[in-house]
Amino acid sequence: MSLLQELLDRGVFVVTAEIGPPKGTDRASFEKKCVQVKGYVDAVNVTDNQTAVVRLSSFASCLIACEAGLEPVMQLACRDRNRIALQSDFLGACALGIPNFLCITGDHQSLGNHPEARSVFDVDSIQLLSIFRKLRDEGVFANGEKAKGEIRAFLGAGENPFADPLEFRVFRLAKKVEAGAQFIQTQAVFDLEIFSRWMEEVRRFGLHKRVHILAGVIPLKSLQALRYMKEEVPGMVIPRWVEERMERAQDPKEEGIRIAVEIIEALRRVEGVRGIHIMAVAWESVVPEIVQRSGLFPRPMQGGGEGA
Amino acid sequence: MIVGEQKPLKEILALLAPYKEVLVLGCGACVTVCLSGGEKEARELALLLRLKGFAAEATSVERQCEREFIMPLEKTISAFSAVLSLACGVGVQTLSEVFPKIPVFPGLNTSFMGAPLGVGVFEERCIGCGECVVHRFGNICPVARCAKNLLNGPCGGSKNGQCEVRPNRDCAWQLIYERMQALGRLEELFAIQPPKNWAPSRFGAQRKIIREDVRP
Image (tube, rainbow over all chains, first blue to last red; front, side, top):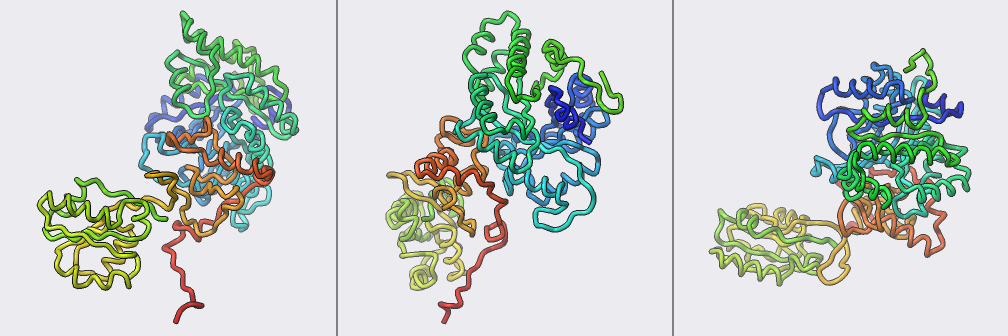
């Protein structure tokens, strides 16, 4: 059983964090990240070759996270695998006890470090959700054939409230919910105005009652990090006030944490937001401080007595 | 039409280096329209090759992809030690099938199936997936025009109507959204598109059509 699902169903405001696998076999560095966030988050989200850069597989990293006593959310991207491999990895992960899955289309390979690679994109994230849901609920593969054994899986997807065409975003969310998404992780929120407008639409269609929405939060480490995200990361909107504060900051790291904590406080007041997802890319060590300063610590005791 | 682009001269010179008498063969079909491999381009390239020391001549046929148009070249070709074809990859292969003994080299990179948008501007429109679904998307094909061939809406990377993958490339889904909105058919985009059947596409196997109804 997914503890993340249990907490969300109980109405607990959840905290998850993204941890990126290493560029190699250095499991010690990944274990260190696990130790850093343990007790401060309800689940860790393990990326699948994010930004199309080759890393230790999400599957293997999830198992390492399990060994470290954390509950993983396994990301599965459609960029590198067809429906045969995706279903196979899903079955494998379920059989080994990985309880949560995040179905994403994946960043385009030309933005990563193997731009000459051939992409797959056999299915998209919405089709993947429907394939996994059918496999779990009806026990049949994408081709209609019977699968053996029980499957327990909590299914999620990403959504970006800030990308164009803005008016279509909520319909895309509705399609994800229709396809089987039980939780949603959003792109990092800096622009609370756009986010709030999107959430209004979400509520207007009653989607907040059908899916658990976890709002994405990125703590800024420096002005350079902000500028990089603003220029290079597709679908990221950073309003001027954030930039101004980072420009003026004597201690940019402290200011980055303050902004993140303020955004979290604002997000907690938005009706329909059921938790936050902290994406402290290459700065996982900051997660405990953000969680503490946001008043989200201690985390509720999880099954099996795995507390802080 | 099939859009192609001439290979860099340096690459062409390297391909032809072992030969002296070279026939530059243009094609009167698609590559003439896209200004890369017609009679005019064949003559210009032959001139350049002569300046580089080759005994190069140019000619052109109506369509290099069809045997009947290239068979009459038999006598002409026998005077050359190599042929540089300015047709698409189909023409290059047909030429080699008809004249298996003479070395044939591609002078173009065959790029895509597309349309001219203005003078000298060509854009991809179709990947020949073998099962056309374009009508579901306001006749803007996401299979050919979205970098991730998404069938269920835009990814999270579209900004100001532009694709995140390449600059100056319209986001296909922005165009689809606007077209369907203008047509008053937006709600059709809310239906979940099931996984596509790629079996009729090039990911299935080499494709072949046998029309019994028109065969002799």
